[in-house]
Length: 405
Image (cartoon, rainbow, N blue to C red; front, side, top):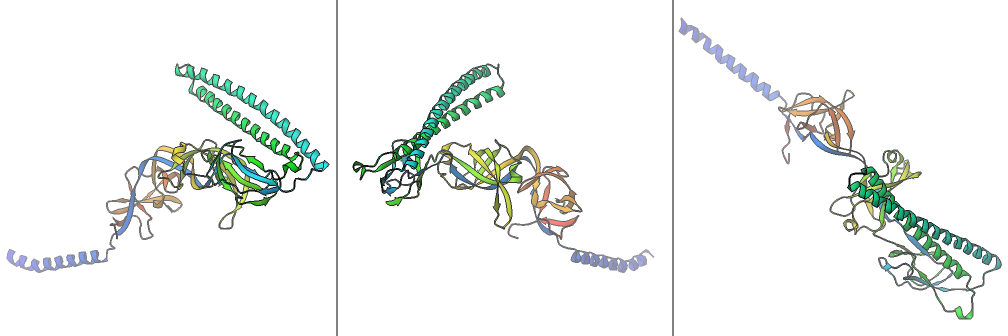
């Protein structure tokens, strides 16, 4: 009996097994293959949010040398990049074209301007004396606070404040001396206009000296040519004393302040330079963007923080990319912004787990061009899917894309 029962069950088991195999085959045949994806790891570390724009280098104090009289400009024997010394280097020679007498009105105006400049020179000398006294006082204050600070009797704030006051007073003294020197040269040029023409002056040239030590930046005239008073001849400045100017959108400019850290990239060197915001101009400018949109922009002046040796190849009018730091953090949970998408009004990501895409809602904070701060939803080490397509849903089977696939 048992044998007959087994003989009856044998065909049924075989048929059942065949049906199960067919069902499994059909299931795997109809099942969608895993989707190839790229993933990135959620990390924890420093993060920067920057405002990026193009900038241009410029010499901080540039002097435009203009012709003081009408005449024939003789050929200039200087080239761009040649060094000049204040009050010693002759940058141009002009042969007076028509040494006519000044009429009474012009002579009166010139003499009045001379008296005004003489008063300006005296005022500049007084400002130099005051600035020098302020500098000496600031240096004495710093030496006292520095000694107390080294002994632990002064705060770092007081130490930094007196050092800043010392450096500021030295800068004001330099500025006052430069203003006095400029006024002297203007006075010299005006006095030259009162020189009475005579037979002895024919054929004599007027030598124009450099008002500032530095280098020739650009020549607007090089060959011999007739020239009118006030026509620019060349530009002089110190290439080592450069700054950067960039025009930011006014909505971005209000997010930063003087002293903000700046990263300087695409300047031609092997690594980025650093700087800081020196000044944000209070006057906005209307500009037309490349798309034809009116924009309100504000000039932002940036000082270099790196030594001159690190940027000696940068000259006047060079293009750079500036990244002004708006916010920075040191231990920030972050993920690539290419993994983020909106799902029912909520920021979400797909996390790759066990060969499946798991839909995870997240809460984000700050964002930059590449990464977003993760406040809730993810932990360090999670692998998020980059650029998820519409084919990916919750629990969709996925696999890591192989190189070259």
